[in-house]
Image: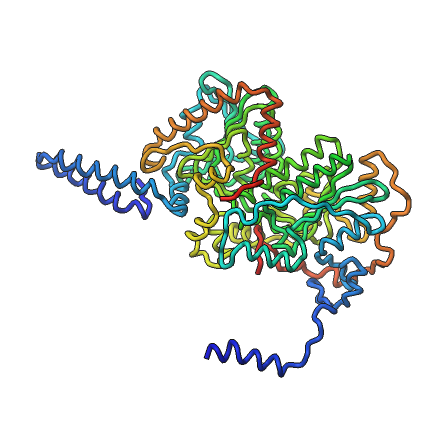
Length: 321
Length: 317
């Protein structure tokens, strides 16, 4: 029976079933559920053209929108011990790593790059959420150390864009130690008197928030991003109450004094350039006014803008469901 | 006395001894020999059980309600103690206890995460789960110690930082991040002792010292075995397996180079003879302190930072 249902039937179905349309041509906005054509979505920097919801962004698309002339140089990161605890849950961690590498084409969850922003040298460390939920293990710590060293060496500002569920449980205590490690990293930039700017993107939670992500000289956040320490589910279970509306969203954090501003993705590059120019006593070159000439921002329809926030709230720690 | 499941055979033996003693009292029987034979067996069983505790058993021992807590260590180790309170920003969080005092005549700042022992004190100390105020208070005390060149000693024992709406609104993550930053920044000796449970971010906030010590049966982990089991195994029943996989025992952490030393506990764990545990901790702290005070302030800071900047590099078990 098993052989029939598990092997034969799918094969037959595969033969009979009509060829599907490639499923990546159209994206559904997780907030307003409208369909968006993929090219339109990319052109709009993955901001929903209907409701203005900011979708998560792959790391290279991020780098493209940050640097002048869409040009940057990525640095080779030192290799670290793979799977130090030889961790295995329902699946081996080494296999999870391989899968994540195949899925993203990255060695681990952070890419470090340098280039110019408004003509000023800058170093950026950007998280890839698709790499095991952007979780922080030794390699991510290593990337942040490297980014900080590069910023110090170039005497340029450090910009970090976290997107992470928190610590990488499969590296156990070593992942926890990355909180201290990344704190030292960004402190080195601080010791040099260089700006350290954080752009909190969806989601920034757990051990990542409770270390370097909350230590920026200036903290920006993308609209609607989940930012917090404990996962919403954990909090709900602890207090046994419903959470307030908009809880742990960027706007909520700004109201509570935890971030400086909530910046629309289309204005992010210009805002960063303005800030590093001001902090570095430099005048950025004039041609930076907007980052995405092709991106015309549509006004969100009022009823959509008031739609309730996305109920799928990630938990404190990485969950690969 | 509270017995853990795996201590049942020992509990039975001790019950027998108590019974015999009771009998001998009432009948005038001489059972001294029998009692001492049983007593010896208890000792043997205890030492064999405790020499091969599994990670999960250690988790239970680390959380044992009779285990000495931060306030017990402070009371026993610190003379001339002056408790300090408040973060000067919002409130006082009793999950973090601390103040100035002396160890062997030398001024010290002690800071501890305190779980509380009975219902009343547990509520007062919020079961050892600090809110942002607690971490900001710890930071304030560390900065104070730093200003006056006073060594800092922390006692870590917490399931984790408190997950609550107010805690999030007041910046739990920021408070922990700044606390870590301050630990790494001070120019005085910083000794951290994990005395029970070292639960994730709430623990590391006070555990990035020049020297980090763990009691023999304490644990220190990125997530509780229960939390890990429910996320990675989707099954809360897998806590034992998760405890094994996480490598959260003092012995594992020493092998990984995350901690600097292990303080041996009396046979049967710190909860069996708290005085012996306190005295072992005293010896360890005094030894470390006498070494660290000889090091120049800049060096103390630099060495601590370098140690944590390299954490995880080349680590393979």
